[in-house]
Length: 157
Ligand SMILES: CC(C)(COP(=O)(O)OP(=O)(O)OC[C@H]1O[C@@H](n2cnc3c(N)ncnc32)[C@H](O)[C@@H]1OP(=O)(O)O)[C@@H](O)C(=O)NCCC(=O)NCCS
Image (cartoon, rainbow, N blue to C red; front, side, top):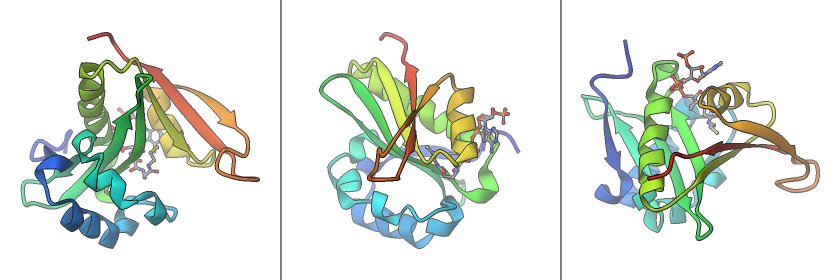
């Protein structure tokens, strides 16, 4: 299988935020290896959905998604990125990021940043493969909750 030829990308703003959020939470364990439910706050779907994208298979299954936003200081913040367990290592994560990069650049973003747990080896490898540099942010998410911050430059529009 390559890059999911049958897969189409749909912006969350073209979908019902409530319906898709509930569907993705119901399928949570197919997308995440640690509990990421609290990161799926409704605001990411209802208010920031215009920066989010859902990957749907030809048969209409949810196979990947990305949620994020662009801040006033031109930082593209990639909040959540997940590819369903049976669709990984097929270029879909890269494709979702390309979609977000293009949109972010069109709004003037210069840098894209993601934050992950230091032991999330696949996520760190993924962002590094896309050209991100990483640094450890101590106590980032609270006392003892270190995070790895992955930062990558975006091309100019
Ligand atoms: C991280 C994640 C989104 C990557 O999605 P993906 O569709 O498998 O990634 P791609 O196929 O586009 O991979 C692009 C490149 O990233 C690197 N990469 C991706 N997954 C990797 C892994 N598990 N180990 C090592 N390198 C990896 C490779 O260089 C890969 O290119 P290659 O397959 O040609 O070698 C996916 O593993 C995932 O959903 N993980 C669970 C959710 C999660 O932890 N998300 C955190 C994101 S911050």
